[in-house]
Image (cartoon, rainbow, N blue to C red; front, side):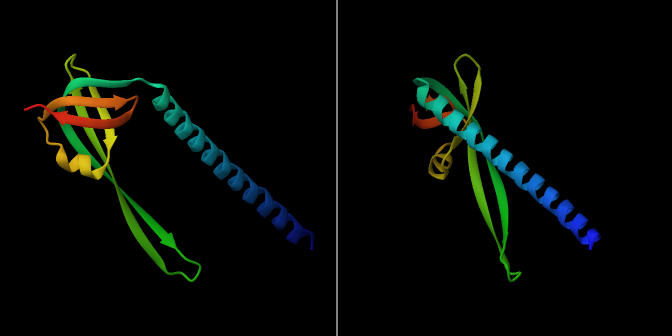
Length: 125
């Protein structure tokens, strides 16, 4: 039976290493997101003339499995718009689907943002 205990001990070590790694990654992501949220909240709200330069979508596919082997998938879409301000600097911001659909490359207007958080874009006619 000593062989069984060796395998069990090795399994325990590997299990706790993976669990520890997963937990550490989770904590790092959580701290990073809270830090970005806090930084955005402390940043001033700015409204500047800007032009919509480009738009892009990022599709993420998630596969979920259940204990009985049946699985299903889901897809989520993230939307990003790049704005160019009068100084020539460019800023890519995450926007929701509605704003993404309303913005057209070449639109000129006033961009309002706070840190890396998109707030609004009002077209100039």
